Structure formats: structure tokens, C-alpha cells
Amino acid sequence: MQTVSTIFINGEAVEGERNPFPVINPATGEAFAQCPAATPEQVDQAVAAANAAFKTFQHTPDADRKAMLHRIADLIDANADELAQLVTLEQGKPLALAQMEVGAAAGWTRYNADLDVPVKVVEDSDTRLAELHHKPLGVVGSITPWNWPLMIAVWHIMPAIRTGNTVVSKPSSMTPFSTLKLVELINQVVPAGVINIVTGEGGIGRAMTQHQDIRKIVFTGSTPTGQDIMRKSADNLKRLTLELGGNDAGIVLPGADIDAIAQGIFQTAFLNMGQTCAALKRLYVHEDQYEAVCSKLAEIASQQVVGSGLESDVTFGPVQNQDQFNLVSELVEDARAQGARILCGGEAQPGNGYFYPPTIVADVSNGVRLVDEEQFGPVLPVIKYSDVEDAIVMANDNVNGLGGSVWGSDIEQARSVAARLETGTAWINNHAEVLPHCPFGGSKMSGFGVEFGEEGLLEYTQPQLLNISRG
Ligand code: NAD
Image (cartoon, rainbow, N blue to C red):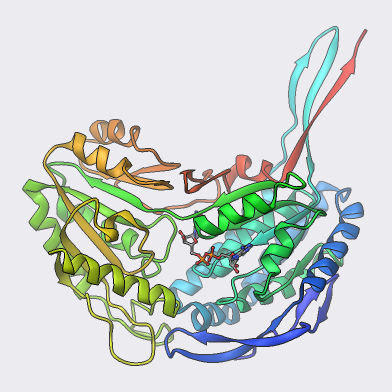
């Protein structure tokens, strides 16, 4: 597979000035390509190029920027096979899921293309006309994780460009190639310097968060990194959108139709092998239905075909990296040691890849690490409750507050429980569903700010109130 072997600064493909680093295919545990590595000086060059481009790009007519995003979406479609292969090679997910990721990347780009930046008339009277406008911020730094590398890069880059900002992107070093390819494609459409990309570790992320000429950081990743970014961003008061970790709870209400909801629970808990920020990560089930729900989930889990994402019959790929694989194993062992019942899975597959089968763990409770911490992998703890009030308390008993869900047939009851979840999104009879028109973001330690929809778009802008006196 051909991978992009340069970074992009000011519209040019340039060599990284550090030694390239290997990128591991999680299905084999072996490197499949070398990624270029930038230096902090190259971060400076990228920011300077973005800053220079901003001077003119901010004034491009709105219609031109809309057209650019449509052309980018067409290019994503035209390169869909290559992008999907790259996502599977570097991230591990089954090819069908990678194809969905590429499709969503194109769809999100088109949605952003068609969004309008609103002008709100605040007052229109004899004394004044007051209008609220929104202007671009300047250079936006985008820092992305390894779970949905292409889609999250699109989530950051497209609204930034749509609103007239310029961008320096830094993908995760575990999954850099799909973003490098995306930036190569975007550069075929936008003026030089509008999109730049730097790769590697060794202070590259920090060089961005401390940079005085970056006006905003949009970051998706872990909470500790988000906290570091927030501290480092203080010097020039960077705007921040922080999409951080989650430990989403789902509550199955008494009397739920188990056959109707079990597939949905399984799919949204194990989406992307559980490596999804807003996956269902803890499930609370009433004691009357506890055993039935546990065995149904274990039955569905046992039907999964675990293997390399490039094999056609595989439904379940590897964990993305060794550290995450170790964490999942450790949390399951810790739960087992505390008396948990492992209903299926629970043992890593032998071999070199990071294969861990979908695992359902029963007889656990809050206070066990597997429940309290974000496992971010293919394991779901199922916790028994006897009173819905207790389930709500346990669901909210977590520092995170990204998403949460309620499952049941009585929608009014589900609605009243959902309203009490301390989360940025509450789903009923679903989980983990993100949509380009629905604002999505975290509460508590899951971050702040939203992505998607008009509210998400406006996070890339500075409000300016225009006050025209009419005497
Ligand atoms: P991570 O925080 O380790 O890394 C994310 C990115 O930050 C990478 O590009 C990394 O190189 C960079 N980085 C690391 N240290 C940095 C620093 N000090 N300054 C600047 N940049 C730095 O996260 P990860 O392990 O790649 O991703 C998994 C986490 O992301 C999980 O906690 C998951 O819940 C979260 N996540 C959240 C969302 C959301 O929308 N809320 C979506 C996806 C993933």
C-alpha cells in the first residue's frame, strides 16, 4: 500500500526533518510503513504559512468556500478505496467499517459546505440597527486521536475552513496516514497555506498548544491531554473545543423488550471494538432481567468473527495499539480477581496482533476499575440494580459526562430518566449515534464546546456585534 511520505506546509509536500517513525498494523503487530516526522521548527513554518494564508482566505466569498468543500467531498469519494484501506491498515477496524468512516467523512464535508453562517438581527429600531456577525478566528490547530482518524480530522478541518480559518493539523502518530492523504487531497482544492499538516511526537503537539499565532485548538483525545492543552493555551487565551474521554452509562429500564434492544446495546457498546468516545461503556440492568440481558449479550458477542480487518468475513478487528490492549486485559483481570463473572471472551487471542474478543463481564459494581475507568476497548461490564433511582445515581457517579442512554418501552419514563443524566447527549433506545446536524459535546471531565450543526460551526468564529446608529 502506497502511503504519503511527506508532510504539507504552505501547499508543498516537504520532508519531515526528524527521522521517520514506524506505524504498526494492529492486526500483525508489525510496522507497515514509515511516517515522516516534523520538528518544532516545522510547526513554526506551518503556522506562519497558515497565518499568511489567513490574511486573504478569511475574505474569500462564502460561495467559494462552499464550492471548495463540495470539491473536497468529491475527492474523498474518488479516493474512497485508498482511504478505507489506509484506515484499516493503520487503525485495524474491519474494511466495511472503514468504508463507512470514509463515507461519513464525505457526508460531513458536504453538510458543512451547505451550512450557513447566520447573521442575527438583535435590534432593528428607530435608534439603531444591531446585528451579530461571526468572523473567522485565524489559525486553528487540530489535534486528533487514533480511533476514528479520518472522520475526526474531517470534523475539525471542514468547519474551520468553511468559516474562513486556516488550519495546522496534527494526527495521532498511531494513525497518521489517512489524515496525510486527506490533507494531500484538500491541498488540491484550497489556496496554499490554508491546510498544513505536521506529524510525530517529541513536542509537536505542545509546540502547537503553546504557539502564540494559533488562535484556537480543537482537540479530540484523552482527558489528561486535554487538561495539558488547556493549561498551555492560557498564554494567548486560545479558544478551545475539547472532546475528551467518556465512560458512558446505559440504563435498561424494568420491563424492557430485551430481544428488541440487545443488538442495539451490543453494537453501540462495541462500535469500533469499543474504541469510540461515546460508546456505551457501562450497562445497568434491573435484577429481574439481569441474567436474560447478560446471556443475550454474550450470545451476540460469541457470534462475532474476530480477525484482520482486511479479511472479508471478519466482523471484529483488533484493538488499535499495545497500550490499549494491555489496559483492556488489565481491567478484565482486575474485575475477575474481584469476583466478576466473565460470560464470554476475557482472554487475548494468541498471535502477534492485538486481538481481544468482545467480552461481557457480569457481577461487577461501581468501585471496580472496569466500571469506574474508561476501558476504551472490547469489554462491557453489566451492573445489576434493583431501583431505578439507584441506577441513575450510579450512572452519574463518574467524573466523565459525555453520553448516556436509557433503554425501555415506556418512552415517557425513559425521557424523565434521560433528563437526569449528567451528559452532553442522552439517547433513548440508542447510543453513540452522532449526526452532522446534531450538536455533540461533553460535560464534566469529558470536555466542553460542541461539534456539528450550526452551534459547532460557530465555535470556529469570533462574534462581532455591528451597531449602526440611527440617531
Ligand atoms: P491522546 O490524548 O493520547 O492523544 C490524542 C492526540 O493528542 C494525539 O494526536 C497525540 O499525539 C496528541 N498529544 C498527546 N499529548 C499531547 C500534548 N501534551 N499536547 C498536545 N497534543 C498531545 O488520546 P488517544 O489515546 O489518541 O485517544 C483516545 C481518547 O480519546 C479516549 O479517552 C477517548 O474517549 C477520547 N476521544 C474522545 C472523543 C470525543 O469526541 N469526546 C472522540 C474520540 C476519542
